[in-house]
Length: 461
Image (tube, rainbow, N blue to C red; front, side, top):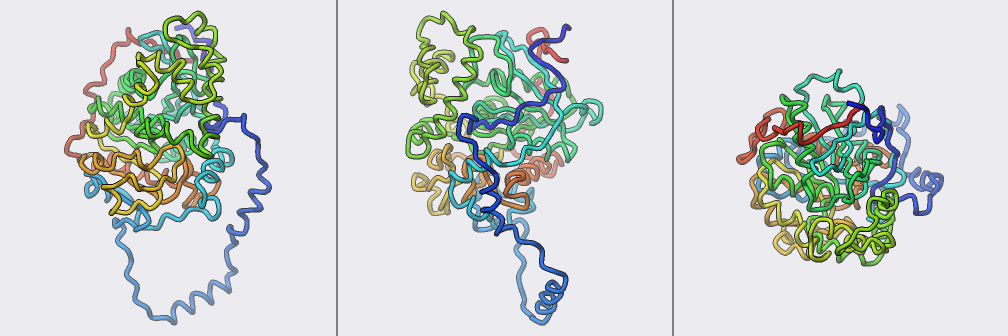
């Protein structure tokens, strides 16, 4: 097949954030380094260690070590699969300790992670998939893995957040973490995201899972002897959970991070206080994608309002002018209310780990979760479907006291390294891959993955 001019390989996607665009003012690393340096203390000299050790030896105190599989009180863990999945984790007995200063404010943590978290280098090979409706999405694979890894190596599909792609730091860290453990990783860049080509006058939405169906079918056909897994962030997590609610036989296990869950509630909070900064940044990113492909949207009639979308001042305006019309919704409120993964999660039959950031999430508030304070400015805690997760025998929810949105600046790699969640995610996925547990309603394997290659042509260089 003739190589498509839409894709080039190897591909090095730009290191952009899906949530804070380059339109915002650039900050210098110098004051940040000065700010955090007092907390990055050097290791004490050898003599000090000897003195400390001697003092410790002279003290005869009996200490009870915490059970490795007993979660620390700083974490709230619920779910119908709690007892089934807790043995997967090796570090939940330790306290969640946010990095000093950065983790004390959810907005500082969110912005710092977006701008200053290191983005690991990775050589990626891009594959463009032509979908049934003549649209296109881009899959970014780690270059060379097709020859290096065994064909039955587990495959991890990554779904970035709104306007995000394989160049985002949180995506790249997860990619590197999984690849270092021998997993085959592919980033699913939605239409127009991560420089993915747009070939029809339609992007993607929180409710649209058609492209996900085709990507999973394609990957499953390409590696029929491998188990497939998926990790989604933010809007990508919402799409993933909606997909899992309809399809239980193609994905062996999945993880949802910073999921807004209830889009009606998320939209309400998006217009409050400092959150308008994120709203404006995401809107600018959406408008840029539209502008880059404006010719496809010329002369769009009916209910389309392209000028409104092109000049939108909020994500809501953009969705009103374009997104909700593209996917057949009567209004933007109709679109949001019918796209909530909070309504879908009760139907998930695949092992699913959800991780969210919230304050004061103690057991007494689970039933009255409207009182739970949000730490994630984009995925409100009051939108989390606590009860449905608690009753679903395939779901586990971990709530951290801090984290911001896609931040989680904590753990051994903080503040510039991988998010705290990456280790937790891999513990869970490797536990499933090892076969150590079998969820009661989980289905895996190649059944249901068959897909007609005539219906979907892939363009690869």
